[in-house]
Length: 140
Image 1: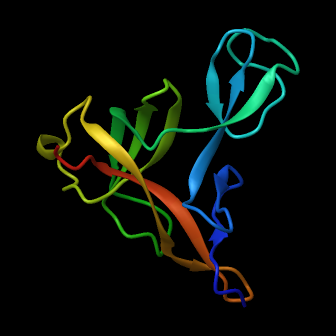
Image 2: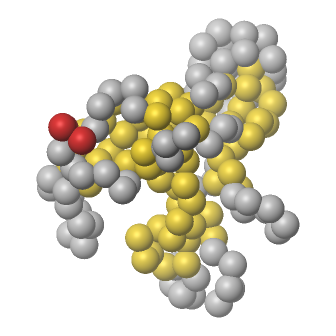
Image 3: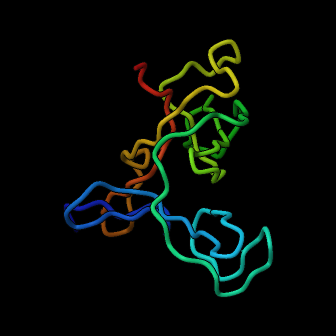
C-alpha cells in the first residue's frame, strides 16, 4: 500500500514535488483545448497537432443537474456539473460545498477546481484515490 494517493482518472496528474493538476490537450491548428489525451482535434479535425497543457483551476458553471438517485453506496443528492474553465475547456465533475438546491446554484457562478479524496474509494490493495471537484470560488 502506498501513502501517496492514486489519480482517479488518467488526466489528473500528481507530480512528485508539486500540486495536482488536470491535463488537457490543445490543438496547434485551431487552439481548441480538451480534457485528456487525444491525437485528433474534435473541433477542426487536425491530426497530430495536439500538445499537453496544464488546465486552469478556475472557471464558471455552465450547466448542472441535481442527482437524487444513483448507484448503491453513492450518497445523494449531489450536483453533477459542467464547467467552462478560464481557457475555454469544458469539463464535467461534481460541484461540492454548495446546497443541492437550484436557489443556491446560479449559472455562470465562479468556481474553482479542488483536489480531494475520491469519496473514500480504495483499490484492492487499499490505496486511496485522489479526484477533482468544483466548488464555489472564494470571494475576493
